[in-house]
Length: 293
Image (cartoon, rainbow, N blue to C red; front, side, top):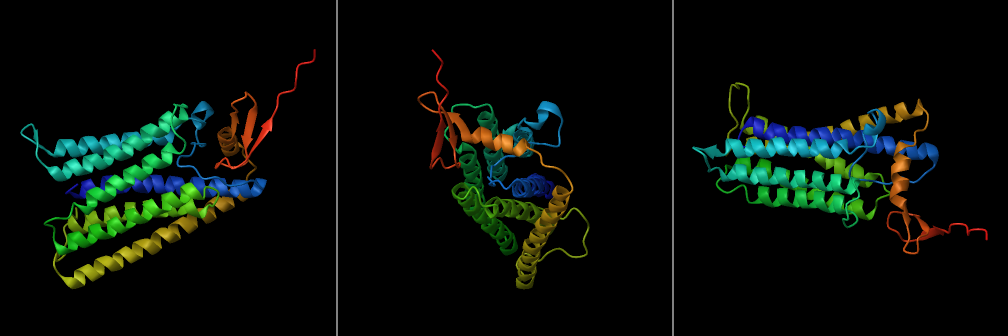
């Protein structure tokens, strides 16, 4: 990741998913408002823009695995010299990509109803961000003051991302929780790109950033604040566009079908059970009518 491309790739990874999550969260929220139903957050979303059975397939998890595989292979290949892996920084980055790829694999297994604990998709993404946090925290030894500052700001974003995911697990019916998770994913994506431009600019510039200059570090923190505001405005604009789109179309039931599948299950006595919420605080049992003798 010690190149511009090494920062642009994960930045693009986070930005693509952030835009996708923003659209899908607002889309589900406004659909629930039209139907007067309860919003429920999920880590992954069905790709309803596709046709036929592909609308239900976990395309998002497949794309996540693809991006993680490309990043993992790229870090391993660029970290090799004379057939030996010698660049430990690349090893850390490859580990980060592997963790996010693993979360995609668990999302696939959840879709195919593998015998896994509940909320394993949330736990896996929390694990991925925890690994990223640990790796970047111990990634700064021997760096310049500017380099350390840029990565410390990135660590702040990852910490906020972890907190938002824990909150979302607890408050699954509050739309602000998944929007907060998405906001910090988007901010992480834009900041990866910014760090790449500051440390490894692909364009010829009249003057490089001064690695130990206090004014340069103040400028970098000001850029970070601009990123925070810009991501917030972009998400608001996306929400406004989705709201206008939903007002001009009829109700669709794809998301409701997916949510109901999460709520309906079979009880231990063979009866159909409908959970009133995802926390399973209370259930309604529908007993099958008895056979007429």
